[in-house]
Image (cartoon, rainbow, N blue to C red; front, top):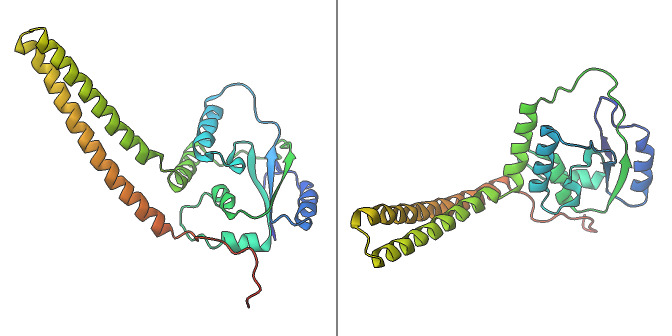
Length: 221
């Protein structure tokens, strides 16, 4: 069994006693949840909310108020070690284990000394690891663009038909027809890129070689 917490003492060590009690009750994972998230608006808090909204995707333990202060039982840790990928978003991997989980709340203490070494660039890099490890949204965006371009192409084509019916000169109609052709070609290109990205995404998922299932307990030696 292990417990992870920050070394700046903002994670109260006395919470470990409560975590151990929940572990003894049969919980393999004990998560900690902050109960005093900053109020108001700041660019950093806004980006934090956007990030967890995208990556969380309905997973409770990936909400912004949860921290990296957690307890893992021996079998939960062994299951976590089965994930061999290099770019690890640990909070997300813990959420995939699926063992009995409990939650404790805490109020972070003031920083004891020093300043955070996690700069904005490091946070951004960590966010990218999480984004590309757990989301297929970029692929869906490419498919969405192809549909958008197709709709615009049909709109311009309809506009061209109306202008032709009204008897406008070719010079006034040619730019509309050209726009329709450009949007149609862009739609085809985007759709092709989406197919390629989908294949690459599937290869990426296969290369990560995440376990298909985790064995909670067995009577086989």
